[in-house]
Amino acid sequence: MKAVALGGGHGLHATLSALRSLPDEITDVTAVVTVADDGGSSGRLRRELGMLPPGDLRMAVSALAAPDRAAGGGSRGIDKAAWADPADSLWVRLVQHRFGGSGALAGHAVGNLLLAGLMEVLGDPVAALDEVCRLLGVRGRVLPMSLVPLDIEADVTGLDEDPARPHRIRGQVAVASTPGRVRRVWLRPERPPACAQAVAAVRQADVLLLGPGSWFTSVLPHLLVPELRDAVMTTPARRVVVLNLAPEPGETAGFSPEQHLAVLSQHAPGLRVHAVLADVAAVPVPHRLDRAARNMLLPDGRVHLAPVAAADPAVPRHDPTALAEALRAVLTPPATMRAGTQHSAPARPGAVERRT
Image (cartoon, rainbow, N blue to C red):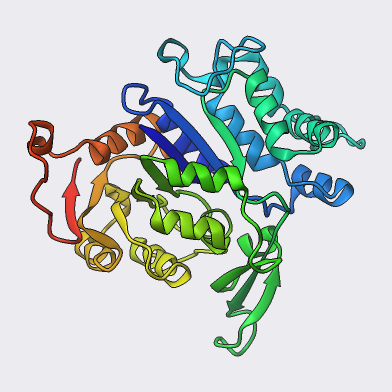
């Protein structure tokens, strides 16, 4: 199957790491990455060069890189023998390395500078990403959701004595770190153009994954690009929403799993999915998530709960191996269909499948 994962940052990295652990099921992986980052090294390069912020793109490339990278050894298909953890690769460590010190290079990731240089030399962000993917032996493709850098704006309440008064906040870092409650987000420029290759990948996918990640600043922005949203809505792919392990300080502080779904529906009315995947320990009241998911799930859809969190409770992160096993269960057809039956009996919308 061809899989497309939409997101950004550490959440997308976890999804891609899980997908690359399923070489028998997934033969092609495409990452579609948000391009609204305005902080750190990415923000500096964006402001100084007027280019796409490269940080989230770099992380996606690193997640899909081959550990035994050989220059020119890239492939659009998955090489099962090479589909291991890329963290051992010297080249991946180099791309992820950040300069220290206090000079002009301090804080810049080597991969960000490499992407910046290629984008200037080639004049095409997609060509630059394809070249870096080739260099690192990436089994798949990394694409921006748009070819123009975007800004996120949000209405946020709870910032003064009137708890209901909305304040407009601009910028990914500002929205992600706001102490108030984010009510809705949108993009500037409005109705930005989508990357044509990303739209094509979504339309041709067999599996489409949305989330996990910073909900308002990494996940929802994909649904605010009209062409990309339309592709997500109409693709024949099996659509799966992967929920976060915990609310994030700032933008989703205090959010329950079902509130994440409510916000997703608010920003993408009419979105229907085949599965909602969540960590079993992160859903204290499963029937509430079941109820919240009913309007979003297709008739044969389900809520799937599984232990997908990494062991370290101090930093909520998805465990790629556990997430891969959960995705395998979500993507595997019912037994009747595997046995040759053309149609399986539809599950009750919102039916919870719980694995511990």
